[in-house]
Length: 510
Image 1: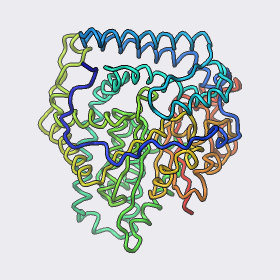
Image 2 (image 1 turned 45 degrees about the horizontal axis):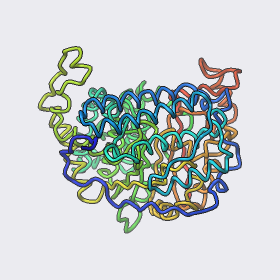
Image 3 (image 1 turned 90 degrees about the vertical axis):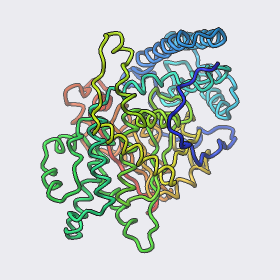
Image 4 (image 1 turned 135 degrees about the vertical axis):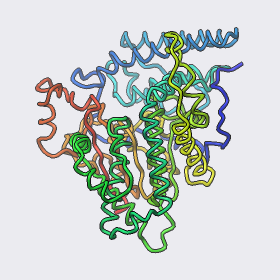
């Protein structure tokens, strides 16, 4: 008996065109990194130090609690015995972290990336937890957690973070329902080529499309319900009103770099080019749950608006940074949408404890979610929505290494018209998580993925870490001077909260 999630109701195979994990065996991969020093857990003014001392022990405690709950629910002696060993391993890791022990070699679980991690540990001189590069040590943390499961018989595919992923999605019910209603209206209108837009001039239609593209990307950027009212019908008059909306102005005020117009122009030109067969757009995903839901809404919109003929989604291959998307998270999400009444009307553990029942879905709400399920299922079945995992995304280094260490993935990404990198971790990996001067151009900070790389990069990032590039001169100082911004402490605290966002573009095909 293994520990697995309930079988999915979603019958279409979700993982397609996955590249085999081919890694270039080298004496080391650090030679491809930026020479700008990375953020380190030894720096008391950085969020790296806060993470190592406070965040990571809490995450490990949560993982221990989750395994205990799974052991209790399984009621199987073999599963229980392996589960106890996993708990021991997690507790040992937590102890090493809290007592500043050395990072130890990963045990061989049959995957080639283990050798890369261990080689890098050796090159780094077997560092201690409180004096090591933040990016590498955080990746190592999740890869080591993963080995505790992969080396078992019954827990190999268990996602210790899955419980909270679906819990947070379920708690986003109002936003899910609101977006489902608007998505149905939008897609239906786009696919029917409504007379409203057809009666407008080319300039008016392009302006309306530009604004709608911006709104869709900004909803995807923030990944929350704050600005759902911004998603409106594709009518010129409504969008003109939208331009002056207070919510829109407030949201854009917190985007300190915004290159969405450049990304829109790339897709608009690709769509208008003679003999155009449709562009491919890639999305390197971040979080599961509601964020994945919004990512799929963006994908569906790009396809319905003919800005893309194919969307390739890149999830992680192992439980990663708590909430990152795995292939199974797609089936979990779509499984919930295949029978939304069962999902939303079944009491959660907390509701059962409080002896309360969730409010039933209306028939209209159920149908609107069903529309999304059917639309995304059709897109996947038609090869327009592809899920393509690759173990490169869970290696310990930055994306500066991509051209040399994962050449097949690199060449594949060149085939895309636009590659969207979602979230804070992808931004850290793009920039090497290095202590750049904040005015360093984004195109310089992403190194080999910058100019002449053959890849067009768009980063959508709400900032939750120290590294920031592409700012106008004086902007970092201005933000540090804001409330809780860090002031003269030496810490860039404004960049830790998720309040501020960066949308940055580099045309590597120019």
